[in-house]
Length: 118
Image (tube, rainbow, N blue to C red; front, side, top):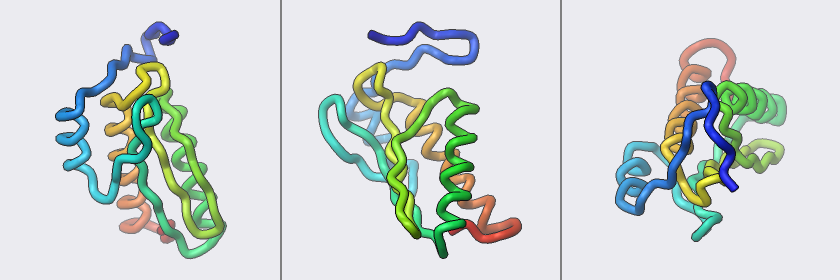
């Protein structure tokens, strides 16, 4: 059962196959994983060490809270795989691709200013 939209949580709808292909082509390094209701986009990020990995995880968690859209994270010592899918539409939505682009921006900003994350 879908959660009703709120002023801060927009109504989400599932994307069609052609929409998914078009949006995926706009992202670097993201790929499809799973199928059916488990269809997701994912990307694995590599880091210099555990503390950098955890800093990234915390940044993604903060971004997810701001967007009221939460990924599945697989965390290892020097890697983190981020999986985006929209559970309430049982597929992929615009929110998944918007949040994936924001995660990429986190990495881009970290590499151009201050301490290195990845």
